[in-house]
Image (cartoon, rainbow, N blue to C red):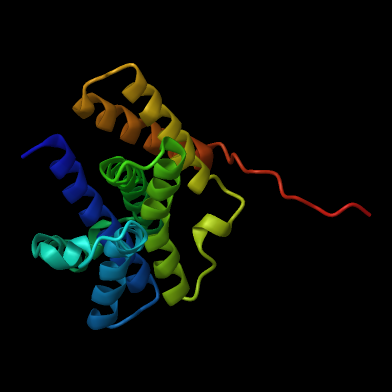
Length: 203
């Protein structure tokens, strides 16, 4: 198993668990919890594949994604009482998924010869769109539209990713460094309450 495959599987489970925890917080039934977990895990990747012309989309061609989401769903149900603070657990899983799915989007863009800027946009959409669907279905304002740092972290991670590519670091090291940078900045942004300033109209 390559590092890329491993982080892809970890990201799928992390996003699925963030979806499941959100759905349980909304007191949905088991079917609703599974659906929210599923769309959170594959929503960003589905948008990415549609944009770059991959058909059928990736998760339809590999049953492992369904199995991974099923595992995440099962773990979320069984160990739901172990998550002492549901909000904190949800945040951590969502942050891990954000870091990992950004990298997957960057790499998918490279595979189809897109420019670095477009690859970064693709990675950001891959990382964020599943969470957007999750929040909309759960009747919440998507995190990406809040003042807190979210999509911006993916963009910064993309800059780091391509800078490391430019200096010809080993791919496995690039994946690890980029994921860690995105996750750490997201954690610090929430911890220290970093926020983008709002744009207000002139009087």
